[in-house]
Image (cartoon, protein in one colour):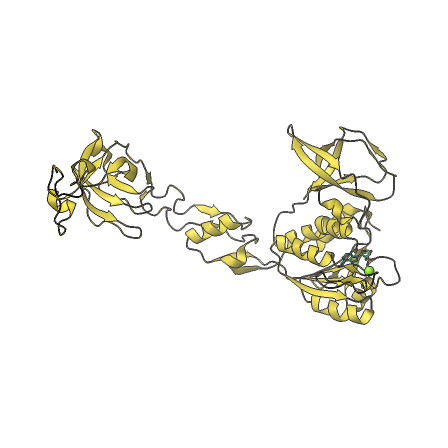
Length: 430
Ligand code: AMP
Ligand code: MG
């Protein structure tokens, strides 16, 4: 049996970072960039309107309200080929390029389009009194006044409602550094730069195999009163999926050497195989023996932690094999403190496992033992400190429900028997 720190060191020392490969944006999510990504052009690549409105020259409308002649319009994806002259404006949509001669945009809400509403022909005509003659149908309002007049109600300052060329990203800038983890915003930035592929570290292919004659898959009937549902399979899959790791589920192997070997072989081809159950000292705990017979080199079996002691770590070539104890809290804990760091190393990511300090808010007693104790706790941030509330109902490694109110593990050294309320304790946050 080895200490936890030593076990983690062994795992990290023997885990290799996977190769760099070309990844599509879809594949890239969760990956780590293996190149610096530069912008080949300015973003925006032209002075762009931030509003729907009219492109004007600010100087021209200093004495607003003023009427300008609208000489054209620029829908999205188009540009105005001419130059906006004094006394003129161009109708512009959000995202369209500002035309030459204009330096700002007046929001549509601060304008009245031609002809100004105060001289619009009254509807109805007939007997009603009308200041102006109604349009005859073929005539547009612009025709009558010889142009499209726009009344600009408020002045704007130069550059108002305009996104300047290059204001988001300058040409030649390193936008994403090597080592960046790709999340949805990074995907969007890569896309805006026109990139469909990146160079990133390959993510491992993982397999999960559960073992135990007592296990039945959720959704099926328990056939004997001694049967239980398999919770580790779905939990391990969720843990891998939450790290964007593709995972193959190999089902449940019986506690028989042949069945174990046959199913195990499929998973041994993958970068990572996680086996649940069958690694303890019981008569039917056949995993270590069958792994050995398949050419797996066992690096360690048993770590001085509670729960999770029977955890096994092995190698077959470069592929990693973890045998996690079947009790679900042990499975969860050992994934968090040993398997997750290994995956992070494989994909070139910084190891996120960190022991931080918190203040325990109740007295805590335990029977001193020989193993480092990990207990589920609820960690609340209050007055700028982490307040630690151990889950009162927790009663051991089978008690998966105790993780529901928890968001961390308190780490208590083996020889500690008492922690006083308000003393500092070590924790791992999930
Ligand atoms: P083992 O590690 O195989 O000795 O199993 C230890 C305990 O965990 C036993 O009570 C098993 O029934 C239980 N167990 C094993 N595998 C699973 C699993 N996949 N889901 C839920 N409980 C399990
Ligand atoms: Mg078992």
